[in-house]
Length: 353
Image 1 (spheres, helix red, strand yellow):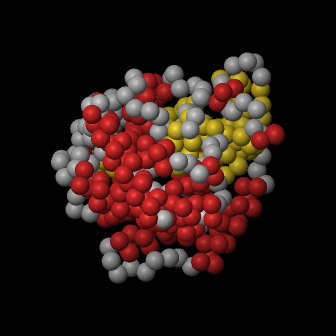
Image 2 (cartoon, helix red, strand yellow):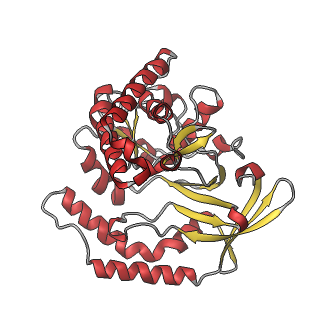
Image 3 (cartoon, rainbow, N blue to C red):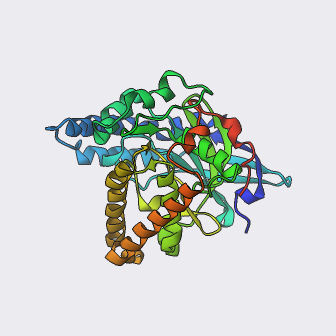
């Protein structure tokens, strides 16, 4: 069976209880009943980061909220109608993400699943510029610490337009929103600067703070036992560009995005630095921790936690970063392609895998 994107979806309409809705309204309706839990969790986590707080709302209350939300959503008539370029049409059920621990939830989920017949499935994602006051300031700046570059990171909030983005001061770290990151990477693929590290997608809408797109279901690296060289190519591409994932890294986000190429389908909370020492101390250390965690928690991934495997990954990353730098790719390259605002026109050629 062809994947969702290779069928070339031409038009996608979303329906909530029979009424057509835009993607932003769908996400709001789908997850708004989780708002109380999210607000409680943000307050608790912010208090912990300020030191001395007590983490966690009442577990039974949170469990009850999630159960009531799941029960309500399951009673709704949620559908997507898709017209493809060959003239065919298909209907899909819209299904929320539910495999999360509500006690850890600080934002509504970014995905809604499209479920069709016979395994014909896709994923609708909402890529966001997160609220400075509700997310960045209380939850993420404390985790970055004194090296956080507030002025550079504020460019996406104070002047979200088509102007180019200025990098952070050397030795600092800036936060990059997902829509702007994937837009810049898309242009770098199109011009042959780097190989693909994000999925193919079909953009279906945008506004000042969100980009909505549909992608295929992807094979996870943990399921296909990706080779060290392929995993290292992904991490080396990020590091050569100065990009880091330590704020939100999960090995579950690593998937096969094209052929045998490894990439990431969830680039929330990416950071950037020009300082390779920061990349080594913050991101590589975090990567080793996540390899250990994956190896211990996933039966098929035990090899990831072994010292020989981690040494091989680290060596491969170093050598591949060197090769990219020899081609003129460095920590400033991505800024030639990034704009302060969301630019949906960058994705016009990305209609199919």
